[in-house]
Length: 79
Image (cartoon, rainbow, N blue to C red; front, top):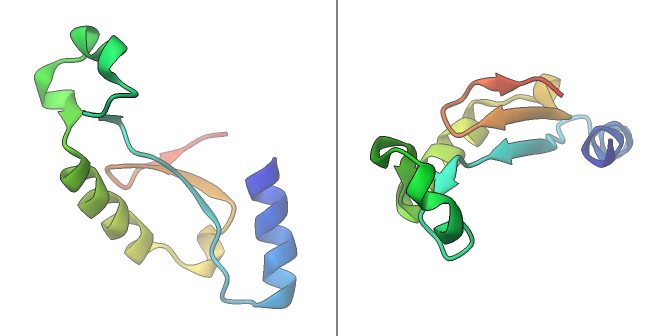
């Protein structure tokens, strides 16, 4: 609800504001190391790949998308 509320409140200040929640998938970092044994190799992403993907997702969003949740592949995630 924090992101949804922020999206509403920030839009009052600037109609072009876009607040997004993003899911990077399983990224090959120290944080995900304990869980990587159960992740198929094609689903374990490098940080560089994730950064590129999330930037692409962000670039495709508009103010109408503000307050929404998206995965690394540009698919919406239901709250």
